[in-house]
Image 1 (cartoon, rainbow, N blue to C red):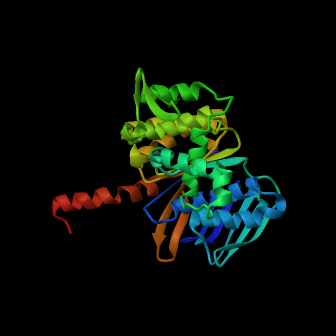
Image 2 (cartoon, rainbow, N blue to C red; image 1 turned 45 degrees about the vertical axis):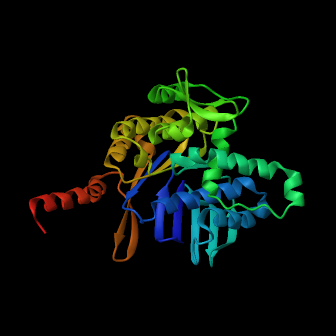
Length: 327
């Protein structure tokens, strides 16, 4: 599938292929996260609404995800083998047209940070208030503003389903973190052997893999779904970046999950390249977001990653010049 984005956020134009694993690299503030968020919003609006309600729900999603600041005049087109299946038009930060001709993807999940675990108690309280009909009917309208992307992930990692799974993916994650995130006395804790560790005392890297563990157990990593992972390297040691890259490729290869990764880590990107070449080479696409005189350019570099790694190495080159006393 090909995603064409025009005048969304700071992106004048971008063409992204979702065919298995898609990796977008680049400096901060070059629109990497924008791509993931707009695709997330479209899929959510499509799957949550009836045909005649998609435009209305799309505007709701824009408010939740972008705080209604997405585009003064933009468009997103989804194509399958050159045939348009989606067309979403934006004007003055509102969706003015949502044309869906064919189903896109079944569901999407956005992993932005492992610190959603630190909001579990807060979201538990919000959920109880939402479910308390007497409260919502007899008290002033209940309204708490919170990031929808976090809320969506919270629901998926805490609502254990009846047919919860323990497969090779889950076993691999539990082996990496030497434990697992489990329900104990109505609270989720990190269980390591006989020790129950409160979430506030769990390392960020373990929390990150814990998200994948719970998503896998709760059947939230399935075929024809899109998993969006935003800069995972921020919380992982280089060794664990390699382990996560291998896990991601396995999701695409074995579980048929579509994955979009935003990253500026040479470790993560090189690992994704190496592992994908071994099993899903034809389903992998790499892009470099770069600031030019004409604005942000999104360029596919799948066949040659040299420009991508050169861009990521610039800070080291500047540091080396500093050490050598070169201005």
